[in-house]
Length: 50
Image (tube, rainbow, N blue to C red):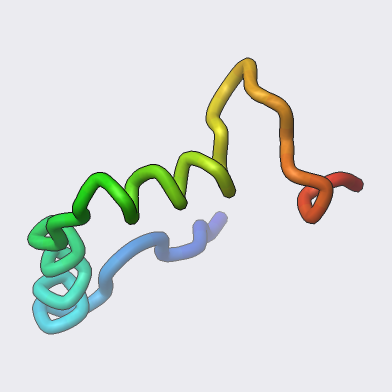
């Protein structure tokens, strides 16, 4: 039995993935993200309707 590899497979891929933790978003950008992805309990945008 085999399983797929999920996530970084090399040290370089891991380093690049961890850089995402360094991103600092201002309040305006966070508000825009909240509009697109309201989170659990909020209405889903029409673009994500199946």
